[in-house]
Image (tube, rainbow, N blue to C red):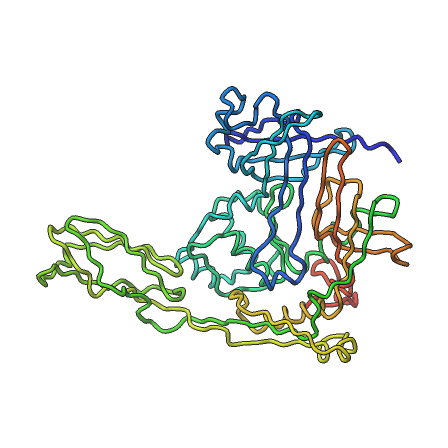
Length: 497
């Protein structure tokens, strides 16, 4: 085996201008992790997993100290100014011929490390992947946009693409698979676009995350049977190339009955979709904004009704102007009172077509009727999974597909593998296909998808610990599904849900 020559380059954009500073000379060590929500479990949780990195930097000169006025970066670090500064780390294992990013994201705030005889003063800085940059940004969808997306038959992929751009994610930093489901109604109402992307991806059996290259990825439920990285082996491991190998059978997602709830919606008749609980008062010559929150989203807005009167009951409507901005589930009403008296607004109403509907459908799949492992449960009793409360599941077909998809992955104890202490492969990505050969643990080669990577880089080298989920458990007909544009109808392949 040839000697691995490992190198790293650390880059930070301290002043947010797009120009990065090379901080590699100060890097003592780095570690990080990235993980997918366990396949299927995303439907039971609306939250994703943000990748992390921890940096230890030499700081003898006070370069990274927020209170050292003589530090070279004091201007950019003082008063927390380095918070969310863009950062990325590249690693090579072949002496610099090819560098691969192992992390892209933003910095948190530094903390002083304890000096050691070897490294002297250090600073420890945590970082988070690119979801952190946009996580707390709230967004709303205009009512006209919301209705138009419904009329165009938007899929989950279309919504994710639009929502990310709404909060400022560059188009070039978005990668998405084709949508699997038409989701009739989806909108943002002063909500985190990242959190809603997680929730929508989960509702469709897919995954949404930012990868080590800083790209936001939506991978649909068929991704691991269509992507070259998932259908061909990216890394082969043997007992000689790892320190530890464990096989784990897990029962956390073991079920033989799966029920998925759907919440269909449809436009109702024209109605009052909002009116205030109290009479709004607007002072003389004043301008105020009233936020009108609807009980449900509005497919259309017919108009705004209002009248104004002063405290003496005199009609002042001619002296009041209201400029509305309509969002999917609220309106911002800018009220200008040009009179010299205080006015009351009554009536004040928004008229439109609300969406009506709710959780009205359930689709149930069981091992006895729809699966292949009922004999296992016949002596152990039922284990039931109920997936409810995800408003993005809106049709019977959607719920039925997810119920069968989950049953196929949950009716057997989940087989996971842990490969620890592997020589690091910086190009490895989540979802990659990996094979493990260990005759002491398994008679056959274990083939799995990477669901988690944690890594360490220091003077001892670059190492990774991998978690893998067995391929054939995720897709019993691995490699035998029909792909449009690739296979012919005479190829006798399986239809994917």
